[in-house]
Length: 357
Image 1 (tube, rainbow, N blue to C red):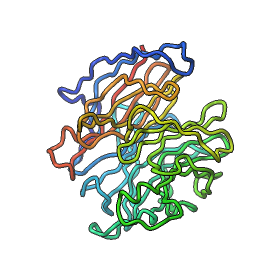
Image 2 (cartoon, rainbow, N blue to C red):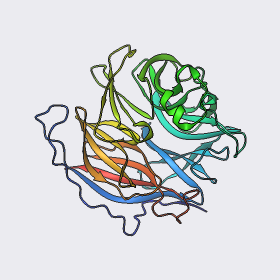
Image 3 (cartoon, one colour):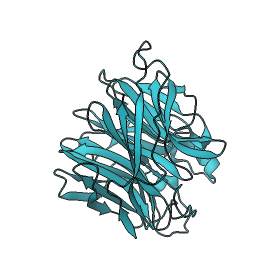
């Protein structure tokens, strides 16, 4: 069963008003904006596990993407990437879907670059459901469109073998991509060993399809990293802490070969980093006393200031964001808190509107 829940508000999910009281942002003297969190809408549900979202606006239409898999959250070759499109953010329909044979597709992310809409997906090699996974056999794939009607791919991304690709950003003439890899591609026997030697690398491309090494954002314990190019050319990144460690703020100047790193005051799972007008918004999963929730923050300097916790629980987070106008924005995320209690299969996609006061 598949449900496109157009403009549906879930009973009991009306979000209260969340206000920011902290001070500081781009300029320390500026107060952080107050944000009203609107009603949470169920955008998509099915008998599969639906997760890892992103949002964008391309050529006047809104796009929502996420992974769907009948066999759950874990690595599985039965997974697909689903792309929905809407003219008004209320009614959504399927625009495209793809999978890669013998690979698990997950973590789809949008990038608008050179008048094309790209979707990037990191892919585990997974010819069988029960086979052991090797991190260094990752390969990035992309699909893309010039008009939202005709889609190309999936195509393997040159220069990404051995890398688990994640979020991307772009200037006018060059695209950048987070790509995790094991240092020197060393063999490891356990997840704990692997985590210690994973780097968060920055790749660059002139066409969005052929990539080469640019720099290192995290030299060890690298993890999911959200990227943002500031107007002055600074590259800003928020990197999830590995194995529950604190997240980091990373910064670099062109040509982005070396990054500074500062630990933040918490872990952020599946991080989002966007500029909303004059301030920086971060979203992702926080876990307090074993209770995981999707939370939203303002980033001020190297500190996070929480202003909302969204209705969520269990398997959740990985938000997407698109600004609707000067005051309003739309945020996507996934959560399993309203599922049937089976973490293997049930998780749904939600949308919530944010409004600056």
